[in-house]
Length: 95
Image (cartoon, rainbow, N blue to C red; front, side):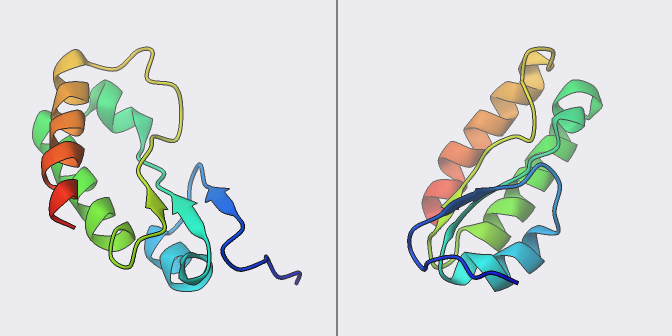
């Protein structure tokens, strides 16, 4: 396995065990979240908020984390997107 240069990479995942990524690659590099787009399209507002908080709780401690979705937001429910935005903005600011 090749190593990545510490502090030089931003690693984007479409689907990954976020805790494992944070514990391994996230120690020395920046990782991006893989928020599931299907929750924004088909989930409830409460499911969106719960998953956003879970990802922030895993990714934010220690820095090196960018919150993003794993696909285009073109067809998402407006109320779910607004819930996601508000959660990341307010809950994420506490970390």
